[in-house]
Length: 248
Figure (spheres, rainbow, N blue to C red):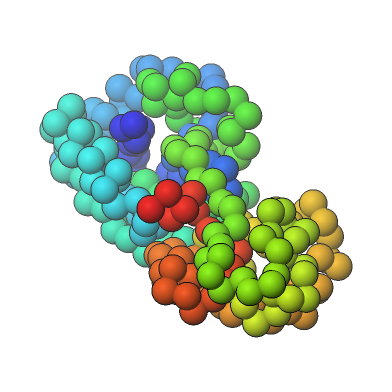
């Protein structure tokens, strides 16, 4: 599905967000009009180019969307990939220095929320924003782009006598000690999403019990290093693996 794209004057940065069950691009004001979009496109054509800061992991989709945008509007799109934390720092540094390079920003809910709260989200609806599922529209100043579904990725040959984990609570089985891997929970991605979601639902005690089982931290938010490690048999369980990895 083509990704909605956007651009704006370089004095501010448009926030885009991706999160647990969703990904999003900037804007959130339902009162914005098609006229606003046309004005943005007209300004972008004068500049002649759009730069988007984005997370790695969705390169094929973003590149296809950028190509479609270029064909539709005749505006060159540059995609710059880095993790959400790095892109957030770049946005803040550019704004503070007055040398803004990014027109569009997309990352996880955590980094996007930080920028939105700091006033960096420009309210603007693109024409197809009306198609967004309302329940996914969770961040004012940003709009969903796509859905990420996380689950438990298991290599059954490495479980031994340990029962197959079928819920987050099952991950607290002492038999899984030393057999689990996850992405860094301190940054945006599967690990960060898992931590925020389970902390909100189960509380601090769940996180402490899981930490006592010493899951290995492999990967800093993006990429597939942890998934590949489970597939090789280095670990029995990946906490918060992505569904596409399960299918693959």
